[in-house]
Image (cartoon, rainbow, N blue to C red; front, side, top):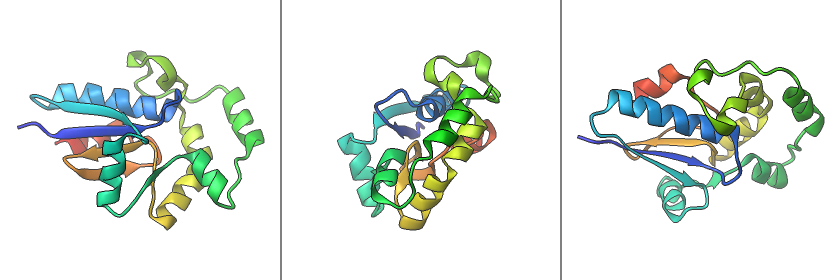
Length: 150
């Protein structure tokens, strides 16, 4: 039996969305007999319908910054970007933007994730397994993803 797995992200080369997608694809192949992993954009009709069925919408950090009182602290992001990042634990198997992710990046974006939680929206990246939203707004650990795929 196959579980439908969706990774919903943004169009730009987002390290968080890319890392989640790569991890999910790798783990699904290891764990599931016939995985069906679909990567989609937050603007795709299927992603919007999934969120609407839950009474939610999918949003991005930029959209939250534009619609809330939380402003993007570019000075902080620049300092995070210029520090040597703590590499993802699976960095050797990663390609592209995912290699630029760090726990510090997720921590810098935590206020936006908390705002999304408090207002009932889904913040990218979003992981949906078997029709259930398992995680959104940051990159879950490999262990967490593995547990959701079983």
